[in-house]
Length: 356
Length: 171
Figure (tube, rainbow over the protein chains, first blue to last red):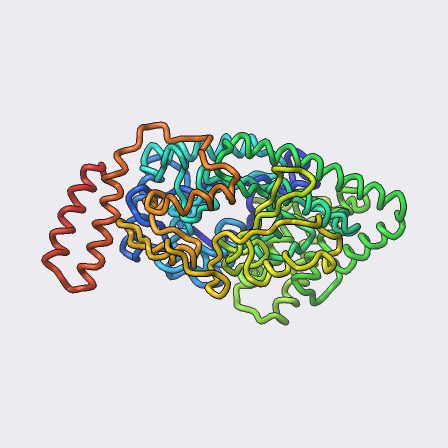
C-alpha cells in the first residue's frame, strides 16, 4: 500500500453525501471474528500470530476480495498514526506488537484488521446515514470470509470473542454525528444520558477516551448478545433521527434568536482559517466545526462540505507531516497546518475536492 | 475491555437500575478514576442523575478492592489461562474459555448484555467438530512449553500431531 499517496486522497466516507449528511458524517459497522483453532490474539505467541495472519490473508485472497494488505510490523509510528487518523485501524492495533496488519478496500470503505483484540475486525463505513446498506455489504463480506475460515462459534453464545463485551453477534453499529448546536446549548449532556439509558455508548472522533473535538460524536451499541444484528441496527436507526431533529431544532432556534451573533461566529471562524499563520489542531477542529455548520445553514456559500470534512482529517498531525514530507515539532506543525488550510480554502472554493 | 471514558483498562463494571422504570438499567465500564466519578454524588455533575441508583461491582480487576475468589485458581485446559488472569486483563485466552469458565461467565454476560442466548447470524456451513479445534489450541500450547523446556523429542511429536490435525481441518 502506498501510504504517501493516501494524503492526496480521502476515504469515500468523507465525501459528505448520502442521507442526512449535513449531520451524519458516516455510518459504520464492524464485526469481531476469531479462528476456532487458535488462542485469542492476546494469548497467542508470535509464531501463532504469524500463522493466523497467513491463514486470514490466504482466505481473503481465495475469497477474491479486492483488498490491499498492509503489515504493521516495521511500519513507522507516523505511518501507523496516519492509518489511525483515517479510521482504518484502531489505536490498539497501532500500538500492539507481533505480526498484525490491515487489509483495505478500494476507496477505504472497507477494512479488515488482523490480530487486533480479535483475530479479525471487519469494518465497512459509508458516507451519510446508511446503516442498512452498510449491513448488507459487511454481511456479504463476512459470508465470503466464512466460506474460507472456521470461526469460533457456539450455538448458545454466538461468535466467541476475546472480550465478553463483544460475544454473540460481535457487532458494533455506529454513526458519527456532527452536533455543534446541541453542544453549544449543553443539551448534549441530556442526549448522552438518554442514550446511556438505552444502552448506547457515545465517544469522540477517535473512539474510546478521545475528546469530542470538532463537536463530533460517535454513537454505538453496547449490547452484542441476545439481539440479532438487524434488531441492534434498528435500535440505533430509530434513535438517530430523533437526535438529528433535536440538532436541527437547536440550530433553528440559534439562528432565529441570535442570527447576527451566529453569522458573526461562523464568518470569523472562516476568516481565521483563511488567514491564520499558525494554528493548533484543537483550534482548527473548533473553527472547522463552526464553518461546517455555517455551510449547512447557508451562511457560507463558497465552500464544499467535502473540503471541510477532509480538512478535519488532513490537518491531523500525521497527515500534516506526511503532506510536508518530514517530521515536525508541534510549533512547526501549527505553521504547516495554517499554511495547508489557507491553500485548501483558497483552491477549493466553488470547486470539488481533490480528485481521488 | 477499556474504560468508556479513557484508554485505561475497565476495572469496574457498573449496572445502574432506573428507580422509576422497573427492569430498566444501564451498564458502564470504567477505570478506577472514572468509576469513582460516576459513583460520586450527583451534585458534581451539571444535571443530576436519578437518585437512589443502585451501583454494583461485578468483576473488578483492581486487586485492591476485590476479594480473591475461589474461581481465580480455575484454569482453561486448552490455553492454560487462569480465571484470575482474565479478571485482571478483561481478555479471555481462547474460545474454549467460554466452556471452562462457564459458571463464572454466565452471570457476567447477563449483566453486560441483559441476555445470555445468541440471536442472530450463524455460520452457514456446519462447524467442524469444535473438539478438534480445541485440541489444536492445546497441542500448540503444549508445543510452546516443550520448546521452552528444551524437550525437543516431545516437541517433534507434538509438531507431527498438529500437522496431521491441521491437514484434517483442510488447511
